[in-house]
Each structure stands twice: as structure tokens, then as C-alpha cells.
Image 1 (tube, rainbow, N blue to C red):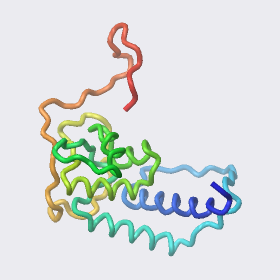
Image 2: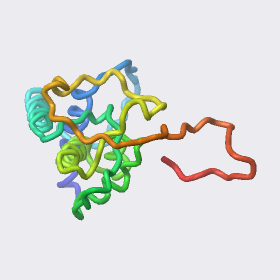
Image 3: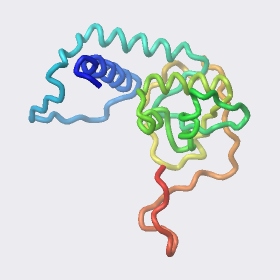
Length: 182
């Protein structure tokens, strides 16, 4: 990547971060007094333009077939529909423990485009939302709904008989080494 592309990349990352903040919530924050300028070429972004981009991104997600919160719903493949080539990487990371945000970070893409792709795949029955009763781990409860759930079309929900296993530190099986990551 050259120096000319860096400001565009920084603006795209800033818009995606603003979307992630707008669709979620901030429980706490800390101000760091150190000055660490990562990109002297970046001229920043006007708040009005940034908020406009966030509004467009929120509207795109709200208008999708099955709006989904990047923080709340955990996803699994349904196995009923084969994903297209463009979506295979996302489906491979939909383990039942990961949210759209988790998958975006895992594959190195923005939260907004991955969330929109997931909403599309929910509508096409490629992915399903894991019922909340099946997940015993941490969940981002403070997420605001994109629109009232009653107005949303029903999304496919995976049928599960057993809850997902919960990892507990220090409770590895005798002789078992560390397993694969999430």
C-alpha cells in the first residue's frame, strides 16, 4: 500500500469504527494523555460527513432482509443452502460463538460490510441465529436494536438440543494440551 492510499484507508476505518460505536454502546472510556500520531498524512474527517456516512450505513443495515446486531446474535451455518464463494469465509467463521463483529475481526474486514453480508445470508437461509438459551458465555447486552424486533421478519433459528460447551480456565482434561482457538 502506498502513501496515497493511506488516507483513504484511514477514513474507511474511521467510518467503520463510527458505525460500530453507533450500533452498539460505550460502557466506559479512558483518555490517554500520550500523543501517538500513526499517520501524519491523515487530515481527519469532518464530524458532519462522518455522521452522514454512519446514517447511511445504519439505513442500509436496517433495510436488509434480516437486520442483525453486530454484537448480539451468534451465528451458525444452516447447512441447507451452500454459500456463494464470496460468503464462504464468513460461513467458515460462524461457529455458534461468534457475532458479526467477531467474524469481521477474524477475517480482517470491516464490521459494517460483514454485518450486511450476514444479514443477507440470514435472509437466504445460509446462516441462522443461535438461540440465546443455548449460549452461556458473555454477550454484549447493551446493544440497541436496529429496529423493533416485532417489525423484523423472523430469522431462521438453528435447532439445537445441547448448549454450547463453556470453556473454564484450569479445567482441561488430563493430558490434553491447549486446543484450537475460538
